[in-house]
Image 1 (tube, protein in one colour):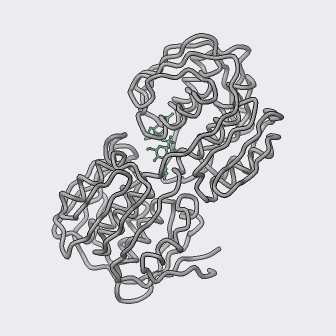
Image 2 (tube, rainbow, N blue to C red):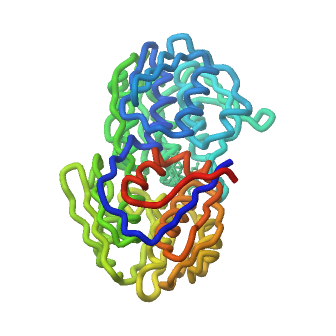
Image 3 (cartoon, rainbow, N blue to C red):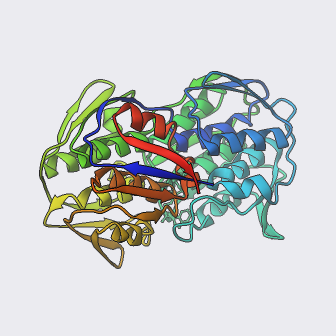
Length: 417
Ligand code: EPU
């Protein structure tokens, strides 16, 4: 195990390149498994979750080869072996194997997914979707077993707007007989990315990115080449970092529209945000106004930027309130930020943040985005070295973090715990 050592207090300046999106990558890999021939995924981020998925593909009999950041997946000899434990427990997105294997083979047995456990994360809407398509779902020694003699298109209304359920149903429905309609679908850019890949593989999906998605099932899917969209959460994290350290960062290889909710909040605080075609430049200011933030499903303010934004709001004058309407209890970063001197109290699903000066301390990341929040906070501290343990969580979602931070002028290093 390693920890991240941060000697902060310097304004970060320079350019950072954003890699492919983690939450797309972990859905695109299982989607690729539905093809009968080779799929090449370009712009793949270098993350531990991606490496784990590569091992899962191998366990299922698929072949993975790398050419730089291009992942070549040959799923022609794949089989739907039960995956009760082990690798599938390491990441949340292993739930996409359910939709992919069900669609391709009519059967899937997958252990309950792992990943960041900041609160209970049910998958009832995924199961509702599979059942509507004609599958039977049962629990078998802590694993979910899903089986269908034939998948049939259906009209599915999601009771909760869910990224995972929307993608999982799209996967299975791509191979169902007839047409499936998903109503109240999630609209995140990652859903459009998965639909784009599936369509390139021969699927017939319309409406991805809107609340109604129509999927006409096809008899088979084939290989193709696809480039992954930029990681909007990684980009947003660097935007917040530029503001928090009063720096000046050009965030390159992004789709600025994906970050509109964050850009608007930063502008409201008094941060300078300059949008280019595929870049965003964020310039910090000596002082910021407090703001209130509500996380919502896309295109609202992303819950995956809530903890990082909480760190930034400790640098604003006055009291800010950040309310998470996606997850009611995603506040594991708060006690750690308090250790660093932040004045925050959690009230229901809100964090009430009073501007304050932070001090160096040893803190622990309890999940991926909480870890990012602590790194941001540590980089604002000028009176000593902040130690962030639990780096393995941060490695799940931030490609080349230490290298990128150093390029921007940060004094950070990894050290054995
Ligand atoms: N929900 C249900 N039932 C379901 C599914 C979801 O009640 O069957 C609820 C959840 O409890 C939550 C809300 O619906 O309150 C939204 O959850 P969603 O299903 O959209 O989340 P997810 O698909 O499990 C993905 C990302 C998360 C991100 C959320 C929300 C991946 C692998 N994960 O999770 O990313 O927070 O969407 O945008 O795509 C992260 O990157 O740090 C991360 C946690």
